[in-house]
Image 1 (tube, helix red, strand yellow):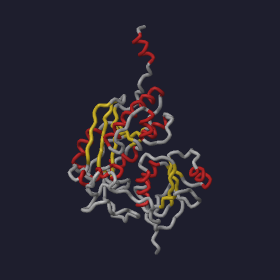
Image 2 (image 1 turned 90 degrees about the vertical axis):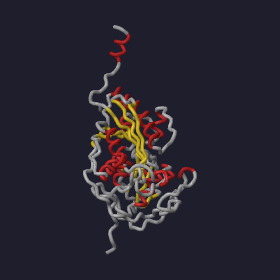
Image 3 (image 1 turned 120 degrees about the horizontal axis):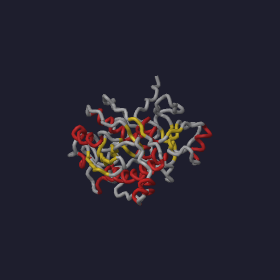
Image 4 (image 1 turned 45 degrees about the vertical axis):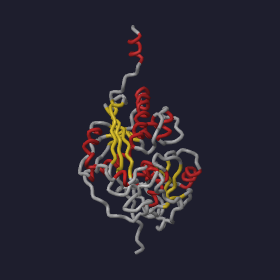
Amino acid sequence: MTMLDDQTTAAAPWPTAYPQGYAVVDVETTGLSRDDRIISAAVYRLDAHGDVVDHWYTLVNPERDPGPTWIHGLTSDVLSGAPLFPEIVGELSERLDGRVLVAHNAMFDWSMLAREYARAGHTAPVRQRLCTIALSKELALPLPNHKLASLAAHFGVVQQHAHHALDDARVLAEAFRPSLHAAAQGGVRLPLLECRPLTEWSDAPAKPRIGYQASYGGSGGGIGGGSGGGQASWRPSRKRPACPYPNPGRYRADKPLMQGMRVAFSGDTSVDRDLLEDRTVEAGLHVASSVSRLTSLLVTNDPDSATSKTVKAKSFGTPVVDEAAYTHLLRDVAPAPSDG
């Protein structure tokens, strides 16, 4: 037997059930809610073994204010000349078609894409998604938290521009390849989930944004084009206004969140924590700094950790959901009951 034959025999066969190609996706958005929009998108196409085929990036005009520029750095001035989503849907579809969508907190990226496609009168050509947070759990990677930066550091991938869609997608593609190979060598089942596209869209009636900072640091309908690329042109005050709604009690899995519920967060999140808390306040929910018997819900990606919040949640019987489920719940928060 030759050395080549010996190496071939020793190598574990690639699982035949694994997908034939992947589209690693990252989108930056104006926020986290049902009516927020995509402002930039990047796709790295990978072959069946996780090797890069090509990559693509575009800005997208959201036709509204860009939201938290202190996170993504994209101002109204930068986005005003960008194409609308219907104008890039063909190029995007070409890169997604026939591939598994891969993203960090994939439920969020998929939800944003599905809504944009529905608004444009199209159907996203995606049938399955794979969340790299879920994959890292399947592989039992020794990560301190679920941030993309931690996954990247584990595999020695250097991030150059966090919250820039193209660099985030590159980093994730480079971290996904060794994760995929580790899964293949260990015979790990990939945590693939079905993507159910929206077939129609209707804009929701405008809702008052509770505690929302109306001014984004500039005049003329959006963020001003100040110096520094908009990175510090707006940031919400950390001193939040009191929630105007009474606490309706605990969250129940068979019902939506309701305005006035007290939501606590524990541990790291893949979405910027400030943005997640801002969206919580805008939806009419109360951000609780601690867990008590009055807490409606605890959001954590590490329910088995021994933090004071998770320990108290278990002792009080407080419902617990992870970040991905919570961002999904935030899409449709029920209004508080009227006094009458």
